[in-house]
Image 1 (cartoon, rainbow, N blue to C red):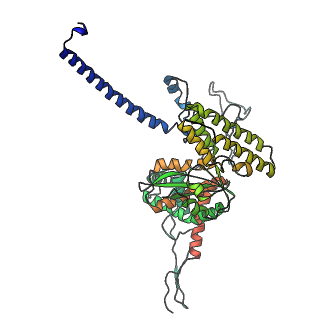
Image 2 (image 1 turned 180 degrees about the horizontal axis):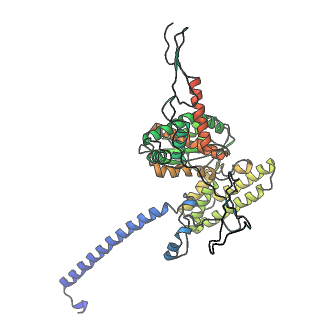
Image 3 (image 1 turned 90 degrees about the vertical axis):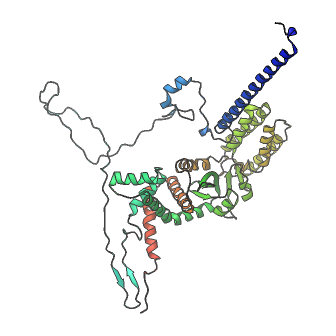
Length: 471
């Protein structure tokens, strides 16, 4: 039937049907838009300029089938396990044998004929650990004395007998190490002690042992903070952590030989002022968070962050391409020039020249919003991008602090939340000590034993007499 022959009612009916169909299609489009927005939000977690390359999704050209076949050989950062091409292989050092066992054979396993003598030796070194040892249980009969002159009562002490609790130095050190080095829950720590040594303790006991290790190491933690306060250059960064389900932050302060963590419920400039002191005179290497310029004017802004944002903008907008290219050329050129070991005067001249170049860069006329934002970021840190040019000890990136936050981030995924102030205290103390000892090439287990033992001795030296009576 020709549409011209349709009646008015038929045309109206067809129109209403089309209108209903359009409405259905619009609803489907809205649903698809919502789904696209949800997926893009999830994708931005991995593909945005603020995400370090180590966390970004691997971009490979293989088909899903090819990737599935090689799952064991593909890392999330796009690399493969093992030695990289062109790198010399690494070999384990050969241990000296504690014992030699002569392994001989009397006759041929094929024909049974007896051997006369050995025609050679095929040595094989085998490294083995001893069987787990049961705990040593010692009862210390601490004799009590009373002074005839002043009436003071004294309880005798022994260096291996703790002032509190029933677990010794090794148990305390192993509990803390299991929690923060092996990342075990307290229940698993208790299981490990029982399986390896037959030592029965609860998850709560494992927690209290770890807390004792933290209290024993707190004096060294404060000494560590003093060392960082006196440093010329400090890398600082922070990341979120939960405290009883509420938002808090774990801060890291790192130098060439020390790493300190501080868990605080603030992300403001009051935290670096507290940790470093308000009169800190060194250089702070940091990202663009506003707390840092509020704390100090002597900053080095991180070029790694800047490059990620510039590259991200350049991939989406042509206007950003010359900005990214200019920054890259400036940075590479500066790195090559600094290798020539320029004099302080040459450094000052180069600093002025590059700063003028950045000022010219931000004066570009651009219209794209994200490029305007990028240039605004460069302009906002114009006094802090080139500190490394004038100060040889300053790094142009804050990768050092970001690397220091990797361990707390992994623990955050396992722990979930810190329960209270005691948990924050233990967390920042033990993490700081272990990270610093590793930096300095010291054995964490031996150092934990040392600080726990030293704390017992110090406690006894400053102990108040148990009871005092009148003479």
